[in-house]
Image (cartoon, one colour):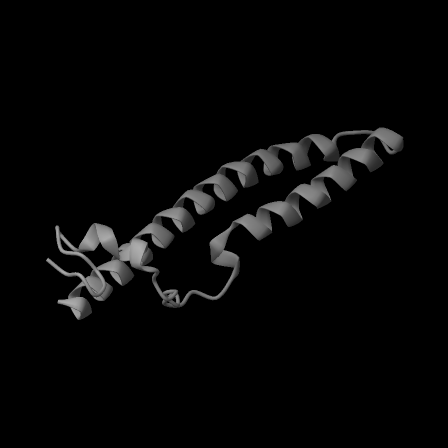
Amino acid sequence: MVRQVRDDYAEAFRISLLEQQEKAWRQATRLSAYLTAASERIESMPTGADRTEAEAWLSWATNHIRSLDPLTRPLRVPEVPEPRPSDLEPFLHGWRYGPYQR
């Protein structure tokens, strides 16, 4: 029973992380499209302070997006943290975890 509960917890943890990564990837993809348009706009700007500021902003934003995108890091099965008893409760289906079990 305890083994199955821990396995269910690990599976739910991985699914949650996968969903978080997909959300971060979508955000990074959307922002990257914006930066592509911004870059084209910057290319048409005359040399000067405004263009320099825009290039600095583009550089910062590019690095920020890179930090958001989970695909810029190695993909691997995540390490599941040791659960607290409260983390396991949703997977007990009415049983109690600890010395006083159902």
